Length: 191
Length: 86
Image (cartoon, rainbow over all chains, first blue to last red; front, side, top):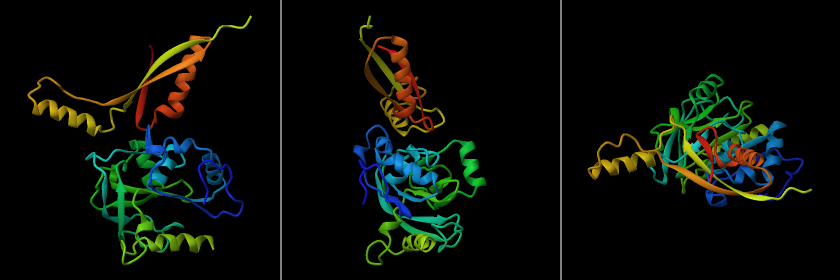
């Protein structure tokens, strides 16, 4: 576990996970203050060296605020905090994070956010589509995201940011097991 | 001779870009309509920041504020900003 005030990532790190939650009260914009915290320059270096990064929920917001991932996450269209399971459709299973899924497979991931509406300009959206960088789309777009986008990859596909919570879908008794294969996929890639 | 430091006050206005839907502004506009207020075409909600800068030169202070806008106060993906001397 690394804290925001640390400045280094251990040498042999394979994967950095920026978890969900809230950071610095999410003042100014979600993830904006966290994006300026001391650890983030080490995370940016790790990204530039081709390290694997997974940003979930607030972690995704932080990755967009640091420009590691393009676009921004803004207040849900209905102005409400939404906390429920959502159907998520796999868009690209040919990556280290999604290799154990199939294209167009429907998953059930919980979402829990107030600022999850993904926005990017038309040029940026076309680039994401052309480069096959949309990871997941919502079936029923709960927050008004552009093109139903729930998660995207970096250019090298070694960074994944998504608003839904795969880590809350790894046990059949609490939330289901849809998220398990995301972690299995990435573990398989790094081992 | 060392120049004397002054305190300059700036106001920064940050608004969502016009192409980004502003549901808060729309809700406020709907409330106007529900209350019989006519002639309001559109409402957009934004943020205002007040910054006090300790500096010896107005232009340098302004540049510093502009740089803070680009770096932190506004996210150019979704927002635009204006700087005013207060």
